[in-house]
Length: 129
Image (cartoon, rainbow, N blue to C red; front, side, top):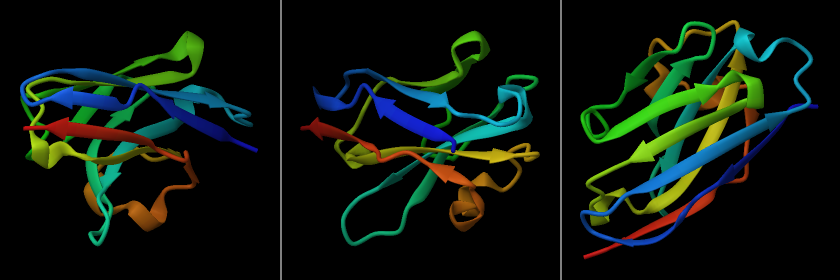
């Protein structure tokens, strides 16, 4: 069973940075066969896509609000994906989840909440003003 564990969340002031990690284990297929995406959610709102990476070739995709501020990367030797978040704003507050899907390459990831195969339990990011 694939397990994804997020870490790196916390409390940060507006303008600050955090780096989230998504460590994967239990993959039946090579890690490179998967796309790993980050989503976030605040109470009362739908889960929204943040960023996605095609692990095989490292190509990233970003939602509009993440473009230019967030960077997604992967360390395939560690089965881990990172999300570097800079210039954080209070609107970035939420629980951040990573998700994995095999044989998927990130197109339309922002609307793929129901299509991702595996999910972590999330890590809370709080940005104070």
